[in-house]
Image (cartoon, rainbow, N blue to C red; front, side):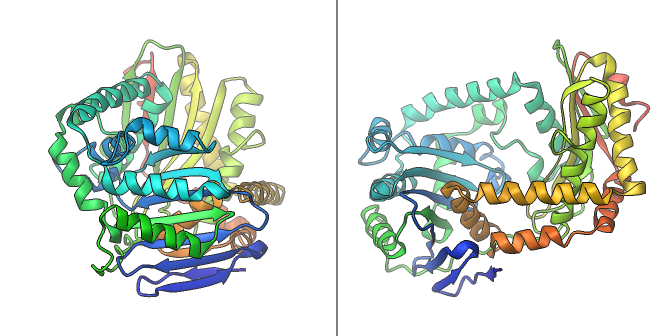
Amino acid sequence: MSVVQFSLDQPELEFTASGGSTVRRTVLPSGVRVLTEVMPGAQSASISFAVAVGSRDEVDGHHGSTHFLEHLLFKGTKTRTALDIAVAFDSVGGASNASTGKEHTSYYARVQDKAIPVAVQVIADMLTSSVIDAVEFENERTVILEELAMNDDDPQDVAHEKFFEAVLGGHELGRPIGGTPETIKAVTRAAVWQHYQNNYRPEDLVITAAGGVDHDALLALVDENLEIAGWDKQLAAKPKPWREQSSVVIEPVVSSQVINRPIAQANIILGSQGLVAGDKRRYAMAILNTVLGGGMSSRLFQEIREKRGLAYSVYSFNQGYSDAAAFGLYAGCSPQKAAEVIKLMLAELGKVATDGITDAELDLAKGNISGGLALKFESTQARMSRLSGAELTDGEFIDLDESLARYAAVQLADVKELAKLMFEAPKSFVAVGEIKESLFDEFV
């Protein structure tokens, strides 16, 4: 079993993770961090270039810049057009993409092991040498507005966005990742360019790869391609520090909100502030969510869908970040059945808070989580993401065996105590659909 704490001052680190895989970490003098996990027998690799900047880091005048950049970095560099970038990956049968989060942004690819040089060359060029062309900027503004419109047409997406706004109040984590139509229309190329210059520097960059990858060969590729991009290797810098992992006190903005839409279902979320990413109780939270609303055997699924046929989709979740989080229960149901479904969701959470869960439920949840993790980490992309998450979040690497041991250590009392905390916490209620504004009156 392995838990390894990284240091920003340690230039080299190597250790063996569960399953016998070798993990290596190098901090270059420029502040760039490179991590690899070799998976014996793998003939492909997943690789990511990431920075610890997300939508929460945007300041006035820059809102939407992080998501804008994710799009723009695929639109061309000083030496490659957007088509060149696409052709480079298509020519080796690879897949590339990017994701913007509230705290991180990642550009990644999965390729055959012998095509790793192509992935490094192209992503390094994209990340360091984007021109953010003025014409492409305006074209992409339209594309992003269409993306936001598409998301706004999905009532479940709308419910989740409004729920985070309600629970996390004025905190920057309550803002939508992609920005809003208003911020996207207002942001200027100069603002996005400044955001790019301020946050895409050597000391911000974390490169991770997993699968059929050679660490020393990857270091050489990174060194060569960052030099080609014009980054001065002689300029020493310390890596960007990790965010502080501690909960902050947040006042919810609203206790209830109804967004009226002429649609067939009511999309309902109710909940409160949850557990932050680094909370030691997160393993108990995973058990709670599995038992309460994590699958077909969960309490919410059985009580609301199977026994009563009131909803097709019903689940619970906890989304944690470095200093804030949201815990919620979701259901999509007929507007006429919305009040009944809300009562049932609250009742099931209340039962766990009062009576706890059974030994059989605890064992089932642990088996579900253990099996899911074992299957997940057969993937090169999952291992790459684990490396990125460890380096970008708090510098702590926890391997599969240690994770399984921590889930196994969760006791019945841990789950009951956590359910009680969530049940008694001040709640926010959000609904999207053709329903009355008074839906939540009896619950708030």
